[in-house]
Image (cartoon, rainbow, N blue to C red; front, side, top):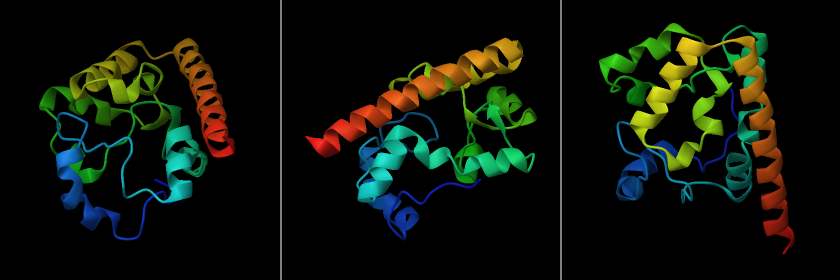
Length: 150
């Protein structure tokens, strides 16, 4: 998956140093204010703009715009069997998880939203998620812009 680099060189090796800060449950690792972000990387990640290069993955037929968010391979290997159905569809740049609160949701809620999306996917649902995502991005960009200019 293409992405802008948002973290310092060697961030994966530094991960062990910050495991105690993990804000996610389940087999995933997430820190909202991750100390491994570069200054511009934090802005890109907090606005979702770091995902823009994944449009190349869509053009190559490797991803879709709306679908379950891909997980890093080590984390994907550890998800419970009942959620493995999420691997039967193309991963997406955005998802129900993103528009329903992402960082405020548990791992189980995230996976259940992926299953809900797979069960109910439709053009209508994709358009709804896409529009909500655009709204989230614009709001986040505005917030980041205000932080930088205050």
